[in-house]
Length: 292
Image (tube, rainbow, N blue to C red; front, side, top):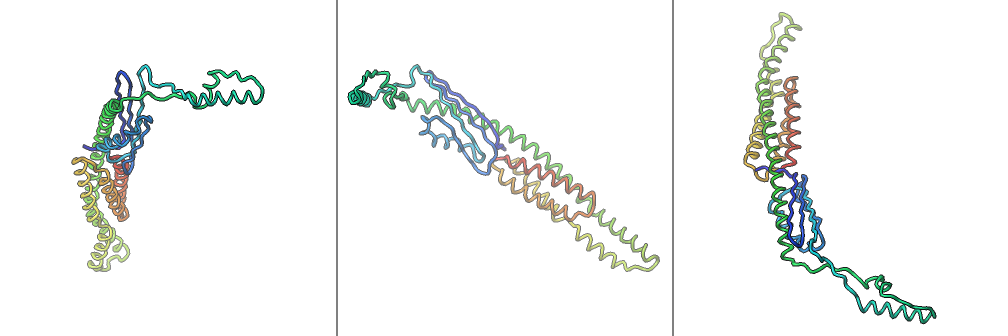
């Protein structure tokens, strides 16, 4: 199974006390880069979340968003710092006596001072919270994996079609080569006849020139290697798995052979097909860079 590095998945888990929502999205990346945004109360579970996701994710820049909504009637307590309130009251009373002014201090006034009243979260059952989170995470990861597999299959189908087109271009170049040599020999003989007229020409000399020319434009080695790379990429796609890096390497080798063919081309038709090869290879390289 071929997987794309691009995908999205969402999961949700609801109980009487809380609602946990998890969203996972990813784009292509050379390595596995996991980034998480989660509520503070889930910080202690970050290692578990990473370990769970890395079981199914090998490469990609992955963003995980976790949202927690408390549905219980009481999720926070008001905490009173009684000792601090007494100290504020004593200090204000003493200040009034020192300045000779009224110090009618009310509880409301003292409660507005820092840290006298504070909010604190109600203690939660960590095991229950973890169960809710992992349930939502599993659902999101399942949808995320499905979307990556679906796009991966689309990439696979597209690349296989492009490889077939490349094989046709290579076949044309191989078939065209003998004709190029024959055409060159005829042009050379016609040119010699035009310049020398009825003068006898050494056939060995013409044959030597043809051999030098044919060796100069010969791309047999390049087409053999290119066909081997095409077959290799096709086999890797059909085998599936985490083949993104290997496919990227093969695409680079294919591009190198296509460049050599184009540089040796001394025929407009061969040049056109070599350019088509390079165009298809560039498209494949772009697609391959999104495969895990």
